[in-house]
Each structure stands twice: as C-alpha cells, then as structure tokens.
Length: 93
Image (cartoon, rainbow, N blue to C red; front, side, top):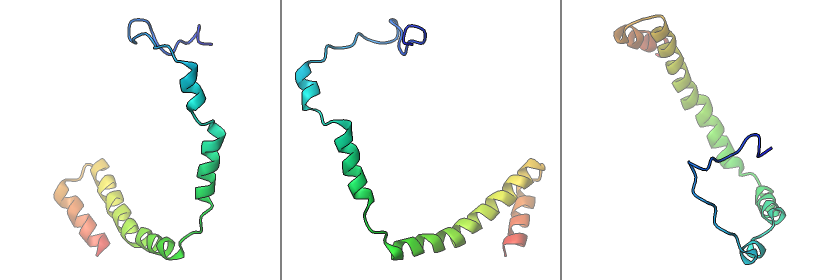
C-alpha cells in the first residue's frame, strides 16, 4: 500500500536515520502502556466534583448556549448588533 499511497515524498522529507536494535529493545511494549492507563482509569469517581460540574454545565453552560444561539440566529437573519443585544437581553432576563 505504501507504493500506491506514499506517506512522504523524496523532495519534501529528509532521509530517515538508521534505527539501532538497542533503541528498539529499550522501549516498553504497547501492552504495558495500555495496562498502566487502564489501572489509572479504574479509580473511584469523585461524586462532589461530578455534581459541581453537572450544576455548572446546567446553569452557566445553558445560559451561554442560549445567548450564543440567539446571537447566531440574529446574525443569520441579518440583524444588526444593537438588535441582537436587545433580543438577548429581552429573552435572557
């Protein structure tokens, strides 16, 4: 497949250096790295942080999304910035 779709061209990339077998032997196998991350991911979920994130997403995030939606629709309709600000303050407050 490399012959059909080469990832590099001779003009755009420098020649690749020779890799010694010592360097390859010193690297960790990919399975060990995955196991280490899997062990870290099994940690206990912090309920307090989850609740704080949920509440912030539902309040501040929702407010931002509504304002962005109103402003975006107003811009697509060709409204001016003063009309968009008026629409946002009327709906948000």
